[in-house]
Image (cartoon, rainbow, N blue to C red):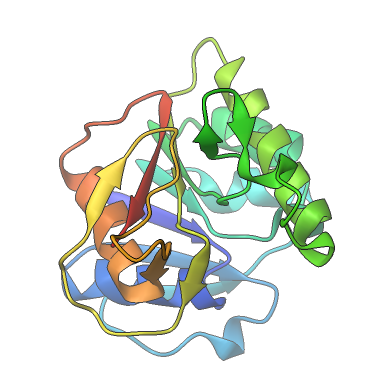
Length: 203
């Protein structure tokens, strides 16, 4: 199974790349600055531009699975989705955001009074991306939303999965480390359980 990872040098992308490499996958790691990608077994770092659809299609061709771990406000979901489809990849997994998760029936986190203004643009564009995926008729996609606090931390392998509702622990905290998020995403690649749907991961 060959995998292309767009945004492989970022916080989430670099942990996903490490998890894939550790599990023995061949990965084409795509980033604006491939020199920032750590050398890992079976990983080929290449330069790519998320706004260059034809360039992306060329990079993605021949891969079974595409994962994108790019900021929503620094990319165009339509270009990404179309590039994946034109390249003929069998599956597309997206590193999502928490803003579109529900905190109560019909109430998204982004629409709550305490949601930080600084994150509204990114969260709003993430919600738009999910809406676009849900309109897709043929693409086999999965959108994995992290918890509110998506941070550096331990790789514990101990977490919970949910669907459209925000996960919080018994203290009311909502968090997941980049490393544990990566486990959940690669597990989904290996044993698909959330095809054409969003799910979430948290402690």
